[in-house]
Every structure is written in C-alpha cells, then in structure tokens.
Image (cartoon, rainbow over all chains, first blue to last red):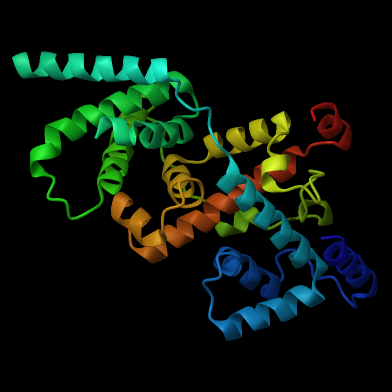
Length: 103
Length: 179
C-alpha cells in the first residue's frame, strides 16, 4: 500500500501533463470505469486505459475514488434483525395470510 | 422459506428503503406475495432470485403509493468533475480496509444518504449488484433489463454515490474523533 502510494505520488510530480475535466479521452475513460473496475473489459482496452491512467493524474485519482466508493458499498452492512423482530414479523405475516384465506 | 430467506430479504429491503419500519413492511409484503404466488413458482430460478424479484416489484409499488415522485434519469455528463478538487474524495481512509473505514459513523451515514438520494431504479441496481453481490445477468432478470442496461445503470449509480461522497467530505478530525 505504502509502495503504491509512493509510486503514485512520485508519478504525480513527474507527470508531463494533467488532463482537463470533460476532455475527449478523459470522457471515454469516465464511460468505461465501472467495467474496468469490474474487470469486464477486453485486455487491449484495459491496457490502453492503464496507459492513459499512467499519464493522467486526474483520471487516476478519479478511478481510485470510484474504487473506494464501490468497496465501501460492497462492505456496508445494515443492522441485522433480532430474533424477536424475526419472530414478530413471522407472526404478522401468518396473521395477514390467515385473514386473506378467510375472505 | 421464511426461515431460510427472511434475513436476506430484510437486508435487501433495508438497503432499498433506508429505514427499519419501511423495510419490515416490505418484508411482510414480499412474503405475503410469495405465499400467494407459490403455486405458480416452477423452480426455474433460485428461490432467493424469485424473492428478490417479488420484493423489488413490491418496493416499486409501495414507493409509488407513498411519494409518486417522477423517476429521474442520470446522465454521464453530470458526473464530469468541473474543478481539480472534485477528482478525489476528501475522505481520509488511506491504508484502511473497507471494514475499518466503515467503522467511521460519518462515512456510513454519508454512504446511506448518498444511496437513499439515488433515483429508485438506480438504487435498486446498485443494491442488487454491489451490495447483494448478484451478477449483472441475475440483476437483469430481476429488473427485466438486459445486461447492457444493468451495467449502464450501475455505472451511473456508482458515479452518483461517488459524487455525493466527494461533495460531502470527511475531515481528518472527524475521522479521528469517531474512531
């Protein structure tokens, strides 16, 4: 992680140019980022994309932030149902079901 | 069926509704509809996929009744950063695993709020794919979409959540104070 960060920081300092938001290639990249993150792009497009990312710190930061967002979504757990809530819900469903059957 | 799937459907319902009582209502509606339709279930899909489908439809019906808000389309153009500061998140979680990062209450709340702000068809796609971990094909069969459409909605949903988090930011002090 530290190694990666250092490499990224070093790259940022030496990068020859910084693309601007909404520029043509950056927009192409923006369109494909989810498929890139999900590893669903053909290998030649992936290589091209990696090449662009290496030269564009803005896109590199953007993809890192999207990757973080997806990771957090994947790991975000809601509070679980308690055993009591589970039993109460079951009771309510059974009651409603019986009422319906009687109609 | 109830015992084996209630936790799964409650978790899905909570992620869609964003609060406990609405999630319980949705669980109830889902199982009632499932019992009603059990005789027609031919076992072509897994029971869980069938229940996800019933829950998704019930959720759309319930939300329509409650709010009647028009469905907003998300365009890629609205997610193009307009200044240098918008490319990264102002959330200092470098070096932390996702589980460690999510111990931060403010991050969890920011994530909940961002997901709840998503138009419902985008939220449903994000929840099924990224949070429930279903494959794009399964999400498509639940939502009645082809895989291409699922991926397109998912991408916009992710960009939306990213932008909401980016706009909000969490300061280092907040992060340390809530550890």
